[in-house]
Figure 1 (tube, helix red, strand yellow):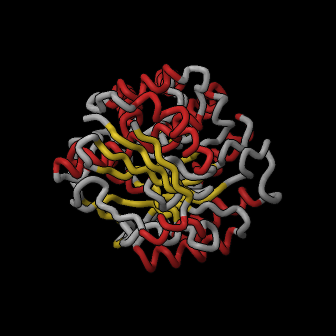
Figure 2 (spheres, rainbow, N blue to C red):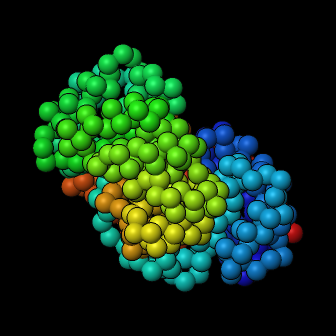
Length: 366
């Protein structure tokens, strides 16, 4: 199958991609969120020229070709753009087969346990506990993630003492029968990360994300080797050789690729296979309710080394107003702490025509 056109519909936060084959069949995907307008420009200028006239059957080879042709641009933006192409082709394949993408990946639709993922740091520990308890009571969540330190904080907390306060507060207020996860977002030096890790262990936390600057793999490995709590990471990484090194050296206990940061489903599957060979579980990063969480649902229901949870962003229009009104019908409903993946063909979604009409449009074609 070859492509006839690639179209993008975007604002600065979200960029949807529509591919049309030479036979007129279509599929929808998405470039990564955040500065999506820039990413869509890269898709048209640095991805599209290399894929027209090429067979899309071997998607791994096609994506490698794009990376090789653009070898002077090995960074994140190119991969975020490639993700739009990849995810749209997977949707097209599913629609042609009359099956959800999860079936094409070897899995089945169904429920997925979710953890309620908080993005907030500008909130007191008790305020955080109160809102997480409300989510527990309303949606049945039994796993929660909150934030430690300051984002890439050079050992500084959001305010002095917040991290040491939030850890016992979460356990006390949420009880012993929930899983507690925490994300340091690259805040700490190894010594400080270990100090905080000991407090986490004392309070039964099970997941310690990105404790050190994510690019310093040796620092993270030192923390991983020292602590009993699972140390996790990888969301920012888009380079496959870096992933191989991270997994080979066992820098983390759980890997967390982001499908859209990494370059799409096909490249993420490569990371999943590396992790499977090393005996490591995969709990992807998907911290917003654009299409990335839906892509992750399909992946988790298919891979043999899926982690325990789906990350589910709980921030609403006050925090992420751009999430509102993306779809005709939301694919995200939580019941008894679980999201459910439908059996509709492809990704099983319809993008809101009103949103598309307001977006910036661009088309590349043969």
